[in-house]
Image (cartoon, rainbow, N blue to C red; front, side, top):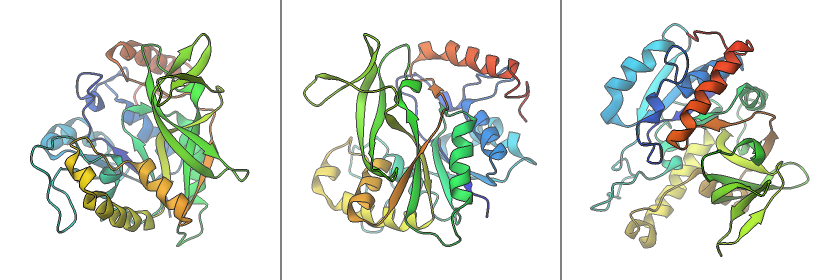
Length: 303
């Protein structure tokens, strides 16, 4: 069974200052996710599913979904603040989405095969899709609890225009993930990749330290685990009282690892990430895509 690609496209780019998911960066108005989908199809993925907000469905269908007709089956599902398990209601005044793992949960009724989760505004590069596509395609039918994460080398994931947030990963001798810790400020200082710790100190790490770029491989049992743990998350008064509390993928993954419910293989990739974290990143991304087209990695017109 061919794996499915799940694209998280419901967030507004607050630092970028607009709906960057729909920003045309290729020569014919291609978005970053157009290139991700092209790479995924080349890597053997058989279906794409988008999680978006209902309020830009029409724009999304016209600008994005229409391109893929005849190329790859595509479906939409919607993330909203009130999409909560029975017995829970959204706290008054909350405007922030419930986080990346809540977005993943929105696809539970449309994905029945192994799947890869990505952000739609990150340019992952083809090797990353080949690596995780092979992992998912090689899983024995009915596999449960054997997940994966593409571990990008942190030195390949920085912005020239400010700090970035990354999940810094630790792994065991079998290349299985042991922890992922979100570091919200990472940059190169005096030639060395460094992150700011809880005490405000800069800590240097190797360029090859694996980081999560939110490129995960799961089997459908992940939805049931997520649904159960989301209820625990919502039942915690501290989370309901905090308007910024979010149900992140690493939160769920760490729990499953610590419980012994699942293993997460850290897959190495030589791919160099790039993306539009800041508006000043935009031209650099346009230039990098142009260079890849000149090198023959992508055709001038994707679809």
